[in-house]
Each structure stands twice: as structure tokens, then as C-alpha cells.
Image 1 (cartoon, rainbow, N blue to C red):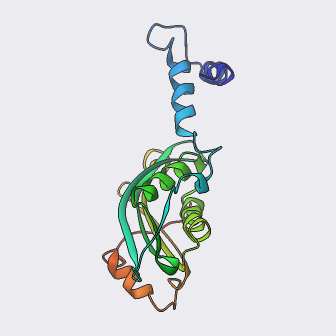
Image 2 (image 1 turned 180 degrees about the vertical axis):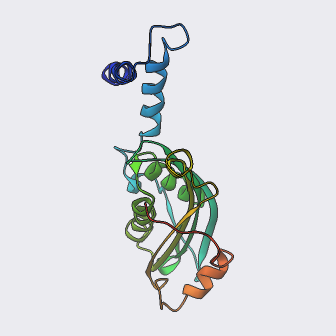
Image 3 (image 1 turned 90 degrees about the vertical axis):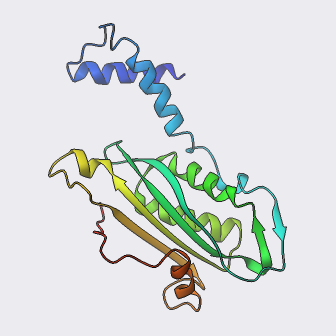
Length: 194
């Protein structure tokens, strides 16, 4: 556990007039520092190291992996945002990877101080560049805790971000098929950019 982080958390709490010497809070700086080390463990990781073996197949269609859960930390307030990611991609020349690797890549990219918009784009980058996919469509639906617990407390608000590339970008020949694989695009969800 990072001693500097522990001491910084203790100083932060004390600056807010929180007594960290009480039995209930004595171990809080250590717990918080340890938790944030885990939450930010993706900072030094690269997605190329995660995919593992690439398999050659005769498959020529789209591949969809939907409802991948993720948890990340908003870099503006260091509060969580969480939800699901839907991924559709067109493999290049039938080159595919193990389906569980998509969740692993999402998790590594989410385990950093993030913005939802950037996270959506980084997932698309990883699939497009690391796998050389012919097309990528990413839809992320998230609850931003900062919207729920501060200010106007906008309960029930969900933020939706979409990133598409290659033959799945807007106007692309397979975009409608990709959207259908994800169950369509809901138009009744309130979308906001933070």
C-alpha cells in the first residue's frame, strides 16, 4: 500500500475537520488509499497486452458482446460512474478473440480517472487499432453519481454515449444491423454531456 497516498488521505480528511484519530476512522486513510490503488490500477496497463490469442475463422458477420458491466471514477469529482457497455464489431478477415477479453479491456480502461465520453472512445480505439477491426460500434449507458448526490440531484438520469468507426459509422453499410444487435437505440433516455 502506498504510504504517500495514505498520508495524503489523512491530511485531506483532517483539512475537512474530520478527526482521523477516533477508533472508527483510524484505519480509514489506509482503507481509502488501498481502494483507490485498486480503482486506478488500469493507469499503467495497455490494452494490447490483454487480448491474448487471435483466432482465424471463416466467420464473416458482426460480433456483438452486450451488457458488459463497468465501474469507473469521474475525473472531475472522483465519484463513481457505472453502467453497461454494448460492443459490436466487424472482425477483419475473420480474425476474432476470446469473448471474455472484451470485458477485460473495458475493465482496464475503466480503472483510471475517466470521462464517460473518453472511455467510450478508448474502447472503440482498442478494438479498431489492436484488433484491426473493419468496424466498431460502442454504446455506453451510465449513471453518474455526481449528478445524483450533488447540486440538483438529478435522480434517474442516465448518460448515453456512442462511438462508431469504419463500416459501422453513421451512414455505414452495417450500422442498422449493429444497432439491431443491441436491441435498437432508445430515444427516451435523457442524454447529457458532463
